[in-house]
Length: 281
Ligand code: PAF
Image (cartoon, rainbow, N blue to C red; front, top):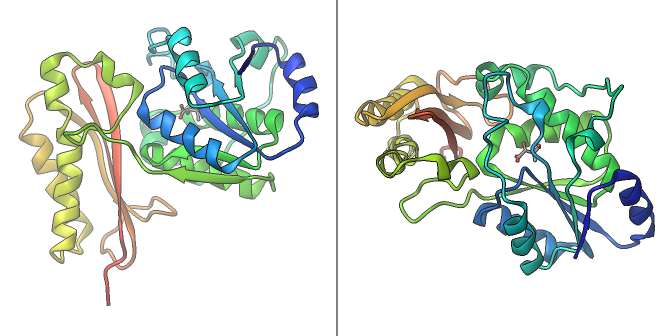
């Protein structure tokens, strides 16, 4: 496995790679969710590139860029074990050198949910992902369903700009109690870790009500709020039952839907979601 930090060196290397490239974009501090993406990329491509870069442009001024968990040595050992060929781990000055002034922005989709709660977050994501896709020219790029809105926004960007390569979405990986895997979970104290399962429980409550025939968006959102209200350590940011393509809140569910939520547990903000299938018949 080759670790590359300098983009000029990477560009030379990329020209020598002839087969299909699968890229796994990450901000490091890897967990089983990321590794499931690397494994799939390994199965489906001739060369696998893992991107490890904590992207300052997608953090707001009051967010946790400085304290975002990092452990490069451990990350490198994990991806090497999964058979990655290259790790691209540039320093911030390589990605955003002096004079950098380009921004890639997807408009409407980014106004909702995470975009509404974290202004500027998504243009940070799309700018760095666009740069990564240009640098690696992958046949496939792998993203986790855990960040459902990110996948939609990146897919929109790829379609709108005519970028080659396919965006592949992989299922959310969960701890045995249902908590979605996230690099931020390490910040939870033991009582917070226990409380954090309320996100998954809330989503399950919506899923169960939906399976039992509930089609009113507000009733489904209320089912999630009730579960969260029963957890004293949880401070909900939003709960949503939205169209899975446009992310517009649904009054009545007639097709598939996306249940999603953001909740603060202590100082840690967690997100999770569950796609709901179209009602049968
Ligand atoms: O999902 C993430 O870890 C990041 O948003 C990404 C896609 C690596 C861009 O920095």
